[in-house]
Structure formats: C-alpha cells, structure tokens
Image (cartoon, rainbow, N blue to C red; front, side, top):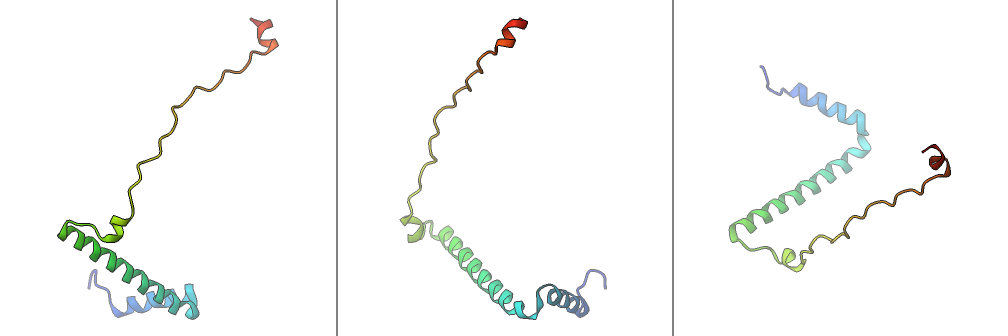
Length: 90
C-alpha cells in the first residue's frame, strides 16, 4: 500500500489535532471551517454565474471602481548646508 491513506493515518491525524487544539475548541474550529467552506462555495458559484451570463451581479455594479490615487511628482531632497570645517579643508 504505497501512497494510500489508511484508517490508522486518519486516527493519528485526529489525535494530533486533539492534542494541539483540545476537545473544547474542536467544535468551534469545525463550525468555522464549515462557514468558510460555505462562503467559498457561494463565491465560486457566483463567479461561475458571472462568467456564463457575462454580466456582473448587482452587488458588483453598485460599487463604483475608483482610479488609483494620483501622487505628486517626486522632488529632489535639499542639499545640506556646507559646514565651516569643510570650507577650511578645501
């Protein structure tokens, strides 16, 4: 059995998760993972629907796209004033 996942491997992984997170936090972690997967699934289906119809959803149309902010042109840094010691050495 090269490359196959056996039930023993899954049991070891579950035990490691229990050691790291504890039995109290596991239901919350599973609930959060389920919510994240549900959100991901709806986003993917929305993207697929947009690709099929060629139109954006009303939510995407409601938000205007703003151009990037214009920055002023860069100005050179002022030169430091010469020190009296520099003039004596020159």
